[in-house]
Figure: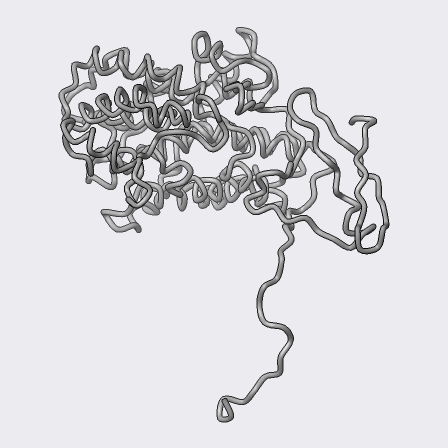
Length: 430
């Protein structure tokens, strides 16, 4: 709370009100407009809530101008270099990095909640064989509330905590099961002698006829991507989780709503859109023409995976993942025409004055799409991968929300633009 205020004067009535200015530990202050309607009779209009703080949160901080991303105060660069996804999940939920004993207990609890109920197999079989994995994931996660009645009392802190653990633990199991069902493979059970990332890769790709041989760079790259995608402040899907959570809905319904929001091509589907763009370009020799089309205001063609709504200079996550992308391609010796297109496009955009002047650098979606492609993860699974990682952030925000005594049910206002009051006319007289 700041002792500073802002005065607002209504030019029609000449009435002036004083509004408090709220400040956090980092970032810009916000004007508290809570009494604006009561005092002046006005609401505010902010499409997309781009200038509105909907909550107080201590989880993630972003400075888009400086290219800064902090999880609980820790720079993403340090976490990417030294931490693991599961440790980052602990940090997001609990607010502090764990010591050895606490992390061991957390990892053990997550590991022993990885199984999904056998009835969920039947649930998946109710989907058409070619259903999108995100549809299956969203429905399956929502259905968990029908299986785990011991975590539906959101007034109980222990039930909330256990629900968060279950969601982090079961998301990879359900995601891999959805993928395998979509391609007609038998569902694999989690191998609890493996770490979180390796276990997921085994559930995705191992077949009964032979063991899965993994290049270490695969698990390392996926762990890094999960860290970078774990949270991103009040984005569309996280805000959705909080909005649904404000109604008192169960945690599984809240996260399922987040999955649905993430599915949008402007949000979590962006890396899938990158691959579709690369396929449209088709060949590395066509990159030059594609870049010129992207610069043409009269062309409908857009380069996906460049620039970012929040980061005005560079996406710090992209800086981190760029090096890993080139390492993955080198270590796996991947030969794929679309990856050739991607690398040529990266170099073209980094050198072209049009993109450099507008700071349209490749973002994390661009590089994550390339890595997923190199790891032979199908395009339709890209957003599912995002959902697995972002679950850590979603449950952290959901838990924080239910510890905040100021939480109110979300109820945005509107400017009505429809018809004024009119009388009903019987159909025969219309």
